[in-house]
Amino acid sequence: AQSVSQHNHHVILSEAASLELGCNYSYGGTVNLFWYVQYPGQHLQLLLKYFSGDPLVKGIKGFEAEFIKSKFSFNLRKPSVQWSDTAEYFCAVNAGNNDMRFGAGTRLTVKP
Amino acid sequence: NAGVTQTPKFQVLKTGQSMTLQCAQDMNHEYMSWYRQDPGMGLRLIHYSVGAGITDQGEVPNGYNVSRSTTEDFPLRLLSAAPSQTSVYFCASSFGRGSYEQYFGPGTRLTVT
Image (tube, rainbow over all chains, first blue to last red; front, side, top):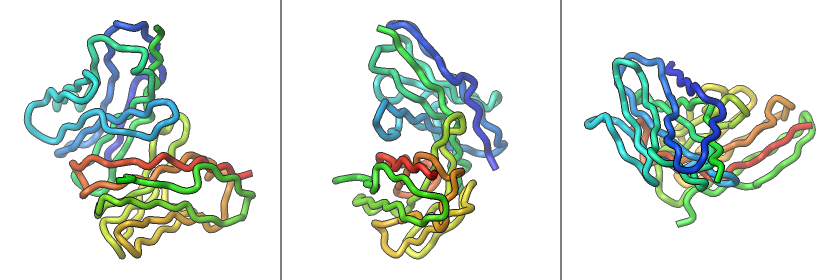
């Protein structure tokens, strides 16, 4: 079964700093890739997803992610974070079956 | 649309007690699933269903039962609660498997003492 690794458990940034959260997965076949966000006290919601085509995908709120097949990576980026981006971010991988695997999550704290 | 709803929001059980976590969706989604969220471990799939009458096990199914008698509802049953089942439980639904976005409910925080 596929597995997902998120390298950073907790990231602390100041407003306007750039963000990159790492995500690597282990599966050799075709995958569908997702980033979900969980704001404090809220449920998970989709930030962006990739399943084919342009490996650079754009999501909501200025986030983007790049799929690099050779590195089995799907890193999340944002050029300038805001205080409202404080949340927990989850990378998820699906190998086209019914099994969705999530990473352990990265908690982002943005200081105003 | 209410989306995905879960009840209760909070629950405290004693070891050995049983209970059912309720999940309902009004989006006519075929695929529904249950996850548990534990610190440092992300979300882990417990059980899922690809349609009414069809369920299957996920990554961590032990201690949990599910059934899917209607498209809308997907309850999760704990037959004999254990402290290891203390967690936050999320129900999710989507149009299908694979590349489809999952819509999550607000979660149920369960404590087993």
